[in-house]
Structure formats: C-alpha cells, structure tokens
Image (tube, rainbow, N blue to C red; front, side, top):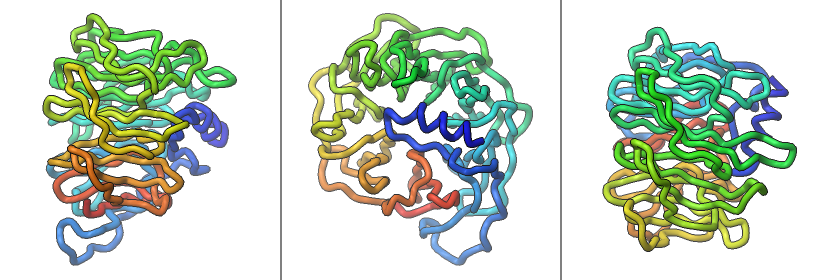
Length: 340
C-alpha cells in the first residue's frame, strides 16, 4: 500500500488533490456512533473509519466508499451501513449516481495507470464492469443514457503527456466512444444530457492547450469556451456553466458563463485550486485548497464567501450536498454531516 500511496501523490500532484490512500491498511467502515437526539440538520458524525474517496446523496441515503474497493450506503440521518459491492479492482477513486444505480471509477493495476468503470444497483448486487483499460481515470458524470469520464493522460517523470481523453459508454456497457482526445491534463467533466463540458488544466509541458471546452453528447466538434489559464473545476445549473480557473500567479477564480459560450462573469478571486463545484438553490458550493482546506459557498451572482468546513479537517476534496447539509469525510476518516 505504501507504493500505491506514493504513486497517487505523484499522479495528482498537479492539482493538489488528496486521496485517502494515506492509510497504511485498507479499512472498512466501523460501527456508527450511538444515536444522538438532534434536529435533522445538526452537525453529526454519521460513521467512523470510512476513509472514503467520494460521497453522493439522494433523497434517502449517503453513498460512499472505503479506502479500497468497497461501495456502501447508509441512511442520511445515521444508521447501519449496507455493503452494496466489493469491486475486484484495487481502489475506487470517484462515484456518481442516478435514480437506480451507483457508478464508480477504479484503479485496477499496481502502477496506478489503468482502471475501469463499474455500476451496481443502489440496493446492492453483482457489480458490472462497463469499461476496462481506462488510462488514469479521474472523474465521471452521468445523464439519462450514458456514463462519461476523463482520463488525465500518461504519467511521466515530470508530469503527464498531453494525451488525456473524454469518453462515454452506454449504461449497459456498450458503445464506448471517445468524445475528445489529446487533451492537456483534463480533470473534470459535467453533462446536461445534450452537451458535455470538460476542463484542460494546461499542466502538461507537451503543449499549451488550456481552458474550458464543450462537445455534443453524441459526439462532434469540440468548442473552445475559454483559453488560458487552465480550468480545474466545472459544474452546471440551468443555462449556465460554472468553472474554476487555475492560475498560480494571480490565484484561482470562480466564474459563470452561458452554456452556449460568451462572456464569463467573475464570481470570486484570490482562491487556490478549486476542484469540486456544486450548485444548490441560489448558491455555489466549492472545495478550496488554500492554506487551510475548506468547503465554502458564495451566491450565484457573486458576493461574500461563507466557510462551511475549515481547519484543514478534510480527507479529500469531494463532498455531497442536499437541502439539509454538507456531507464530507474528515481527516480522521469519519463521515460527517454539517449544516450548510
């Protein structure tokens, strides 16, 4: 596991991400803490010992991983965790859900360069491998018919080649298609079912391509929405795309742009690396890897920043959100719900 940890640190160094392979041993979730008498959205430790790489929520459950290859769920207000699947690959990096199914990207080889995409019913059962031999899989998104993912590219001694990809596959595991290739370290992807938006960080020395891109979900011409600097985070809401620029000189910036392209509106400046964005209601929630890692929010129109989780009490950059609160894993590997 130490070799796995070191290689993951190398793989994700460019965007300052952390992965819960920092634990020397693979861990399964422990028993939940005793029931607490509290309001629905009060701060609460839901589970200890998860060391989860990602969390997702629906109306009833929180879905999460362990530090290896397990997928679990539990009631959002606490309770016993249910094992949905233990995948054969080494490590799960990220999850996505739809109405019936959990999807996962995994790393399957000891060199941490090849992985797979899997699905399993939300109620549990036999997992299905949708795609294999995915080069450095990193992030995924789903719509009504397809699963999409980004591959960062081929690792080298000093970074990556500019050979990243955006791919898709039908939810039944057929029709694997490359939507974009020869990308400069793409790390995020989002879709509204009609258009796929993805990022190029520009962190590979192989070329200078960087910015926000889009491509029709059915394939076609790639559209350049922004040029340098690089983009590291993206999410969608209504007619707009929200994204985070990466600039080591001036600091990170959150922006909004119509999905059709045009002028970008700055929402916040002076951030660091913002890799995870979620819109809920009239606010944009984001992870900021500043001197102190934090989960924050701002109004969609821009305005004062509100810190929800700080003090570096975060294991990874992923979090989930609903009308009740924010769900994340802290540095001690516990699954926490906190008011938003």
